[in-house]
Length: 222
Image (tube, rainbow, N blue to C red; front, side, top):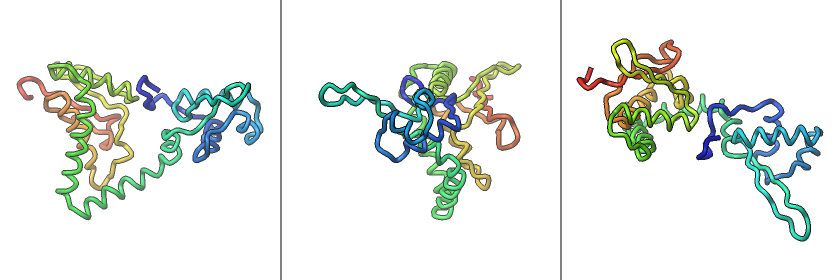
């Protein structure tokens, strides 16, 4: 996890860790001793798994002070990130269904209005933490924020000196719908609004490219 407590792209979970997550989800905070009884494995094994899960952001640990002379003990509970982990595959069904419903209710116009509002909301999330006064400086600061949140992004200059942003990871991947591809507009509009300059998509992972690539327009607009 980063300093703001958000889950990063490096967070992983083993089969043994997933078993513990499933035992914790939807139940009151529990102790190591309780998990040992349920799993039937050693204290060392349970403790190691819990430490990894806490570090990855899937489990929360807090101290409970007992009455009398009893020593404080640790209680463990699953986080919201664990819930997202368990039901990540469902998003591939639910999200496209939501986009299709919006399209059926309000047509393409409503879809575009929703996309516009989402883009502006995300842009504001980053813009209020950026102090740069030039597009390139603002882009650099935005990339740092994205990396802190776990995104894998790179920037380079092409042969003509144009800045290229490579979105190697995609925060909207689970929202993609092959029928409309509408969600692809969110990233482009959001980045453009934050850096204060036009952004052009030059490659898209859904068209066969390794990742989505955006080009920051030069001063002359090309």
